[in-house]
Length: 270
Image (tube, rainbow, N blue to C red):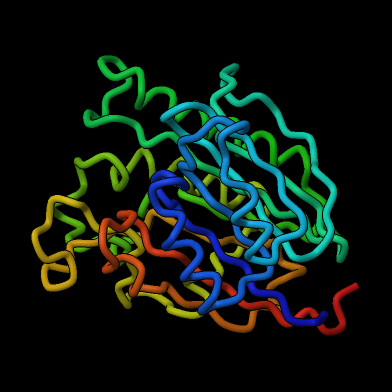
Protein backbone atom coordinates (compact mmCIF):
# COMPACT_ATOMS: atom_id res chain seq x y z
CA UNK A 1 0.00 0.00 0.00
CA UNK A 2 1.90 3.02 -1.28
CA UNK A 3 -0.77 5.58 -0.39
CA UNK A 4 -1.56 6.37 3.23
CA UNK A 5 -4.24 8.72 4.56
CA UNK A 6 -3.64 10.01 8.07
CA UNK A 7 -6.19 11.98 10.10
CA UNK A 8 -5.84 13.89 13.36
CA UNK A 9 -8.96 15.06 15.18
CA UNK A 10 -9.72 16.41 18.63
CA UNK A 11 -13.19 14.89 18.99
CA UNK A 12 -13.97 16.45 22.39
CA UNK A 13 -15.46 13.18 23.76
CA UNK A 14 -15.39 10.09 21.58
CA UNK A 15 -18.66 8.76 22.97
CA UNK A 16 -20.51 12.04 22.41
CA UNK A 17 -19.10 12.30 18.88
CA UNK A 18 -19.11 8.62 17.87
CA UNK A 19 -21.70 9.04 15.09
CA UNK A 20 -19.62 11.92 13.70
CA UNK A 21 -16.52 9.73 13.63
CA UNK A 22 -18.46 6.94 11.91
CA UNK A 23 -19.78 9.33 9.25
CA UNK A 24 -16.38 10.86 8.70
CA UNK A 25 -14.61 7.51 8.38
CA UNK A 26 -17.25 6.23 5.95
CA UNK A 27 -16.80 9.31 3.75
CA UNK A 28 -13.02 9.68 3.94
CA UNK A 29 -11.51 6.23 4.62
CA UNK A 30 -8.48 7.12 6.73
CA UNK A 31 -5.76 4.49 7.10
CA UNK A 32 -4.53 5.95 10.40
CA UNK A 33 -6.85 7.89 12.71
CA UNK A 34 -5.40 9.82 15.66
CA UNK A 35 -7.88 11.16 18.20
CA UNK A 36 -7.44 13.56 21.11
CA UNK A 37 -9.65 14.47 24.07
CA UNK A 38 -11.40 11.12 24.01
CA UNK A 39 -12.55 11.75 27.61
CA UNK A 40 -13.22 8.13 28.51
CA UNK A 41 -11.53 5.37 30.52
CA UNK A 42 -10.11 2.48 28.50
CA UNK A 43 -12.70 -0.02 29.74
CA UNK A 44 -15.56 2.20 28.50
CA UNK A 45 -14.05 3.11 25.11
CA UNK A 46 -16.43 2.11 22.24
CA UNK A 47 -13.89 -0.20 20.59
CA UNK A 48 -16.47 -2.40 18.84
CA UNK A 49 -17.65 0.57 16.80
CA UNK A 50 -14.11 1.20 15.56
CA UNK A 51 -13.67 -2.45 14.66
CA UNK A 52 -16.83 -2.16 12.54
CA UNK A 53 -15.27 0.86 10.82
CA UNK A 54 -12.47 -1.42 9.64
CA UNK A 55 -9.72 -0.56 12.09
CA UNK A 56 -8.09 -3.85 12.99
CA UNK A 57 -5.36 -2.27 15.10
CA UNK A 58 -5.62 0.21 17.94
CA UNK A 59 -3.99 1.63 21.04
CA UNK A 60 -5.84 3.80 23.55
CA UNK A 61 -4.90 5.76 26.65
CA UNK A 62 -7.79 7.35 28.46
CA UNK A 63 -9.08 8.74 31.71
CA UNK A 64 -12.47 9.78 32.97
CA UNK A 65 -13.86 13.10 31.65
CA UNK A 66 -10.50 14.62 30.65
CA UNK A 67 -7.74 14.32 28.06
CA UNK A 68 -7.22 10.92 26.42
CA UNK A 69 -5.59 9.91 23.13
CA UNK A 70 -6.13 7.02 20.74
CA UNK A 71 -4.68 5.71 17.48
CA UNK A 72 -6.60 3.45 15.10
CA UNK A 73 -5.03 1.88 12.02
CA UNK A 74 -5.84 -0.40 9.12
CA UNK A 75 -2.12 -1.26 8.98
CA UNK A 76 -0.33 -3.33 11.64
CA UNK A 77 1.84 -1.46 14.12
CA UNK A 78 3.85 -1.88 17.27
CA UNK A 79 3.42 0.44 20.26
CA UNK A 80 6.41 2.63 21.14
CA UNK A 81 7.37 3.61 24.66
CA UNK A 82 7.12 7.26 25.60
CA UNK A 83 7.99 9.26 28.70
CA UNK A 84 5.63 10.23 31.49
CA UNK A 85 5.30 13.88 30.59
CA UNK A 86 5.87 16.36 33.43
CA UNK A 87 5.61 13.48 35.89
CA UNK A 88 1.85 13.24 35.32
CA UNK A 89 -0.04 10.21 34.07
CA UNK A 90 -2.61 12.32 32.27
CA UNK A 91 -2.90 10.51 28.92
CA UNK A 92 -1.58 13.08 26.46
CA UNK A 93 0.68 11.05 24.16
CA UNK A 94 0.78 7.78 22.27
CA UNK A 95 3.35 6.58 19.74
CA UNK A 96 3.27 3.70 17.28
CA UNK A 97 5.57 2.33 14.59
CA UNK A 98 3.68 1.23 11.50
CA UNK A 99 4.70 -1.80 9.43
CA UNK A 100 6.27 0.57 6.89
CA UNK A 101 8.68 1.95 9.51
CA UNK A 102 6.91 5.27 10.03
CA UNK A 103 6.54 6.31 13.66
CA UNK A 104 3.40 8.30 14.49
CA UNK A 105 3.31 10.42 17.64
CA UNK A 106 -0.13 11.60 18.72
CA UNK A 107 -0.13 14.50 21.21
CA UNK A 108 -2.66 16.45 23.21
CA UNK A 109 -0.68 19.37 24.63
CA UNK A 110 -2.17 21.07 27.74
CA UNK A 111 -4.41 23.99 26.81
CA UNK A 112 -2.82 26.24 29.43
CA UNK A 113 -5.79 27.91 31.13
CA UNK A 114 -6.77 31.54 30.58
CA UNK A 115 -3.91 33.64 31.96
CA UNK A 116 -0.55 33.50 30.13
CA UNK A 117 1.52 33.95 33.29
CA UNK A 118 3.36 31.04 34.93
CA UNK A 119 3.53 32.86 38.28
CA UNK A 120 -0.25 32.86 38.75
CA UNK A 121 -1.40 30.05 36.46
CA UNK A 122 -0.17 26.51 37.09
CA UNK A 123 -1.89 25.30 33.92
CA UNK A 124 0.17 27.67 31.79
CA UNK A 125 3.35 26.57 33.56
CA UNK A 126 2.39 22.95 32.88
CA UNK A 127 1.91 23.73 29.19
CA UNK A 128 5.32 25.36 28.80
CA UNK A 129 7.03 22.58 30.78
CA UNK A 130 5.32 19.98 28.61
CA UNK A 131 6.54 21.68 25.44
CA UNK A 132 10.07 21.95 26.86
CA UNK A 133 10.06 18.21 27.54
CA UNK A 134 8.88 17.57 23.96
CA UNK A 135 11.85 19.58 22.67
CA UNK A 136 14.29 17.67 24.87
CA UNK A 137 12.83 14.27 23.93
CA UNK A 138 12.98 14.80 20.18
CA UNK A 139 16.40 16.46 20.37
CA UNK A 140 17.78 13.32 22.03
CA UNK A 141 16.18 11.14 19.35
CA UNK A 142 17.50 13.06 16.34
CA UNK A 143 18.63 10.86 13.44
CA UNK A 144 18.73 11.51 9.69
CA UNK A 145 16.99 8.23 8.89
CA UNK A 146 14.04 8.87 11.25
CA UNK A 147 10.64 8.59 9.59
CA UNK A 148 8.57 10.41 12.19
CA UNK A 149 5.15 12.00 12.07
CA UNK A 150 3.91 14.24 14.88
CA UNK A 151 0.20 15.02 14.98
CA UNK A 152 -2.35 16.30 17.40
CA UNK A 153 -3.94 19.19 19.18
CA UNK A 154 -0.84 21.13 20.15
CA UNK A 155 -2.95 24.03 21.47
CA UNK A 156 -0.70 26.65 19.86
CA UNK A 157 -1.38 28.68 16.72
CA UNK A 158 2.17 29.72 15.81
CA UNK A 159 1.85 31.83 12.64
CA UNK A 160 0.19 35.24 12.38
CA UNK A 161 -2.11 33.75 9.73
CA UNK A 162 -2.99 30.83 12.04
CA UNK A 163 -5.36 33.13 13.95
CA UNK A 164 -8.17 35.42 12.88
CA UNK A 165 -6.47 38.46 14.45
CA UNK A 166 -2.78 38.42 15.32
CA UNK A 167 -3.00 41.76 17.18
CA UNK A 168 -6.07 40.84 19.24
CA UNK A 169 -4.75 37.42 20.23
CA UNK A 170 -1.15 38.29 21.16
CA UNK A 171 -2.07 38.15 24.85
CA UNK A 172 -4.50 35.24 24.52
CA UNK A 173 -3.32 31.75 25.49
CA UNK A 174 -2.51 29.74 22.32
CA UNK A 175 -0.91 32.65 20.40
CA UNK A 176 1.32 34.41 22.94
CA UNK A 177 4.95 35.03 21.95
CA UNK A 178 6.29 32.66 24.64
CA UNK A 179 4.13 29.78 23.40
CA UNK A 180 5.19 30.44 19.81
CA UNK A 181 8.84 30.43 20.96
CA UNK A 182 8.36 27.08 22.69
CA UNK A 183 6.73 25.62 19.58
CA UNK A 184 9.56 26.94 17.41
CA UNK A 185 12.02 25.09 19.66
CA UNK A 186 10.08 21.84 19.24
CA UNK A 187 10.11 22.31 15.46
CA UNK A 188 13.88 22.85 15.46
CA UNK A 189 14.43 19.81 17.71
CA UNK A 190 14.19 17.52 14.68
CA UNK A 191 14.01 19.88 11.67
CA UNK A 192 10.27 19.21 11.56
CA UNK A 193 8.34 20.17 8.42
CA UNK A 194 4.91 21.71 8.98
CA UNK A 195 2.91 19.53 6.59
CA UNK A 196 -0.12 21.82 6.63
CA UNK A 197 1.89 24.92 5.71
CA UNK A 198 3.75 22.86 3.11
CA UNK A 199 0.49 22.86 1.14
CA UNK A 200 -0.93 26.23 2.26
CA UNK A 201 2.02 28.60 2.75
CA UNK A 202 1.76 31.80 4.74
CA UNK A 203 0.20 34.32 4.64
CA UNK A 204 -2.89 32.33 3.64
CA UNK A 205 -5.15 31.89 6.69
CA UNK A 206 -5.44 28.36 8.04
CA UNK A 207 -7.72 27.43 10.96
CA UNK A 208 -8.77 24.11 12.53
CA UNK A 209 -10.65 25.30 15.65
CA UNK A 210 -13.59 27.65 16.14
CA UNK A 211 -15.02 28.53 19.54
CA UNK A 212 -18.43 27.25 20.57
CA UNK A 213 -19.19 30.83 21.68
CA UNK A 214 -19.62 32.09 18.13
CA UNK A 215 -23.29 32.01 17.13
CA UNK A 216 -22.34 31.40 13.50
CA UNK A 217 -18.78 30.09 13.52
CA UNK A 218 -18.53 29.90 9.74
CA UNK A 219 -19.72 33.44 9.08
CA UNK A 220 -17.60 34.95 11.85
CA UNK A 221 -14.64 32.68 10.98
CA UNK A 222 -12.74 33.66 14.13
CA UNK A 223 -10.62 30.54 13.96
CA UNK A 224 -7.23 29.34 15.14
CA UNK A 225 -4.97 26.55 13.89
CA UNK A 226 -4.43 24.47 17.01
CA UNK A 227 -4.16 21.10 15.24
CA UNK A 228 -0.96 20.14 13.48
CA UNK A 229 0.77 17.53 11.36
CA UNK A 230 4.58 17.58 11.18
CA UNK A 231 6.98 15.23 9.43
CA UNK A 232 10.73 14.71 9.57
CA UNK A 233 12.72 15.64 6.42
CA UNK A 234 12.83 12.09 5.04
CA UNK A 235 9.03 12.11 4.66
CA UNK A 236 8.72 15.56 3.06
CA UNK A 237 8.96 14.26 -0.55
CA UNK A 238 6.15 11.81 0.23
CA UNK A 239 3.59 14.46 1.21
CA UNK A 240 0.78 14.31 -1.34
CA UNK A 241 -2.18 16.41 -0.13
CA UNK A 242 -3.71 18.10 2.92
CA UNK A 243 -7.20 19.23 3.85
CA UNK A 244 -8.95 20.64 6.90
CA UNK A 245 -12.40 19.10 6.69
CA UNK A 246 -14.82 21.85 7.66
CA UNK A 247 -18.03 19.86 7.20
CA UNK A 248 -17.91 17.96 10.54
CA UNK A 249 -17.53 21.28 12.40
CA UNK A 250 -20.99 22.16 11.13
CA UNK A 251 -22.71 18.91 12.11
CA UNK A 252 -25.16 18.83 15.01
CA UNK A 253 -23.39 19.07 18.40
CA UNK A 254 -19.92 19.02 16.83
CA UNK A 255 -16.44 19.07 18.24
CA UNK A 256 -15.00 22.58 18.17
CA UNK A 257 -12.08 21.13 16.13
CA UNK A 258 -12.18 20.06 12.48
CA UNK A 259 -10.38 16.91 11.32
CA UNK A 260 -7.09 17.42 9.49
CA UNK A 261 -6.30 14.99 6.66
CA UNK A 262 -2.84 14.44 5.21
CA UNK A 263 -2.24 12.05 2.32
CA UNK A 264 1.13 10.40 1.72
CA UNK A 265 2.50 8.68 -1.38
CA UNK A 266 5.07 6.31 0.09
CA UNK A 267 6.31 4.97 -3.24
CA UNK A 268 10.08 4.53 -3.01
CA UNK A 269 10.26 5.11 0.74
CA UNK A 270 13.15 3.17 2.25
